[in-house]
Image (cartoon, rainbow, N blue to C red; front, side):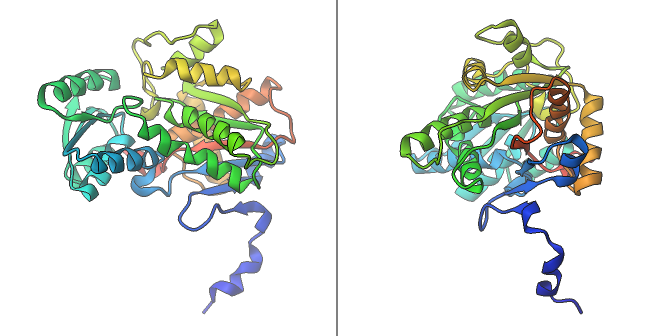
Length: 330
């Protein structure tokens, strides 16, 4: 019988970086990197969070604060993963939870929300329709609304991803962060974290990453606004994409997202559903990582940026996989 320590020599320590006990991993992905001609390509894998996605970060903070403030019932609209995360933490906190989500949300998101005791209302429409209904119910019945950017603590939870990146890179920051953008809480939160780290004096240098927002071409309000120089996004009509987390016709924080992209000298990229599927297969075959479609979109966007010569071969590039592909099996 093999013992675990006898297997250690086959692991190349340069290829795996862990952030510490209980944290999600920052993984070097050398095989995809070699294929693309990049020497420092990483993925921040958020799929090991509770309920299988990065949404646990923001909702853990938001529900914890709600519990502290004596709030008894919380409500949220969701495109999928945020609902399951809120339901889980609300159950732990003994707080009632109600969730509005599109009826075509992945079944795993619906079932995990109900399993955690939340009342789930399926909506014939998009997350924007769900948000409108949730808001009406909140006002009429006294539910506390945990919608994206309607309270500050989800952003505070998400910004920890920025702290973790700095720690993993020895208190420096990567050159480029490629981030799938629906509501945009994580992008805005990380940019806030980098400013805080600089103010605290924790960074060895103050060079910040160029931030890249990725959306599906069937729902790309941020990309359109960025490319036209607009300060706000227009509502995207007929939004459609297989990546349910990217099917957000207009973020409540569109102005913040666009500001942070421009302040970072970053950019915004739209990718097709077909390229998302191809990228999901590519990273699975080469690295053994089963990404959510939203996470795969970042690899598809990276290939677009390489074609544009926007990224240099030796730059440190971080892709964000925001959840587990297991939640999208149907």
